[in-house]
Image (cartoon, rainbow, N blue to C red; front, side, top):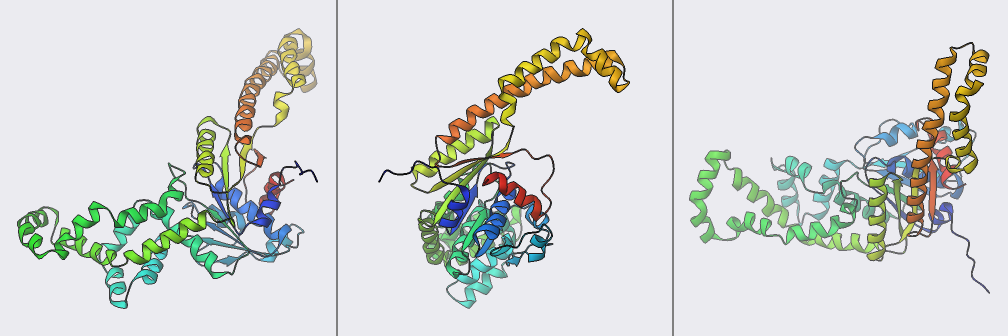
Length: 389
């Protein structure tokens, strides 16, 4: 039997996977897209669907209309669907990653004993250092994905990954955590507590540093990281598990991008990198796409004719109909025609980038630029209809 050449659709992808990571540059609509896919999955596919946002803007709660979303999963009430005349086949839940609470849970989970756990949690440097920890949000997002999947409570988990200057940060977070525990910096900070000889030799340096930086500054840092290093085995083992989960056949990645130059180039780079790492690239979503009608030859012809005939009587006829000033009307009609040509050039460039993205993924979905903001479940489902018509 000949194999079908039909391209898959987004619903089929969501139905086939257990975990979906929505990735891409900042500002391209990842949060809204993740919520729309989750709402559509709960409506059309069924089961228990959880969408996790790590976007500090907290826009997901506004779109779902469930008030403030915290670290614990919150169910979107069926009444939110009933208001738009829809009875969902499954359940939609939402959760938002809380960086501080997430670190607290990690410490409790990985600490080898209660004494070390309590010592870390009450350490005066703990809150400041974890809040400023490089790629903290990225690593916690991956840890959260692992934790949620391990519970077995969810049929589908969709993760809205952190906005980042480098979209690969979220993929590299487990490796970077492992490298941190083997870094020279960590070894240097903890040497005074592992070597009595070094402590004696370095005491004058620490005393000077304390006078400059404050009482026991470097000692406090060393003590904190000594405690942190005691949890190395747990963190490294978990990071390895997270890396395996990212490459698991049950996990897929959806790259979201606009068709502007910078985001689309980053989306192409990210897509190629996912393929290079043998991770499953399920779909690319081109968001806020201009209508194809802007590229139609008939539309371009009409725009040129509008500019040409605006001063040949058309403006006078339109002005008479509108009871407006003829010269002002001519200027408006001419501007419309010329602006259309400029927009058509942008639409053509978008089409070229869309074709480049289509070559990288088995599924390319285009979502139009909507004429209103996403405010509730109805708007999310409207967007989902564009994503999976």
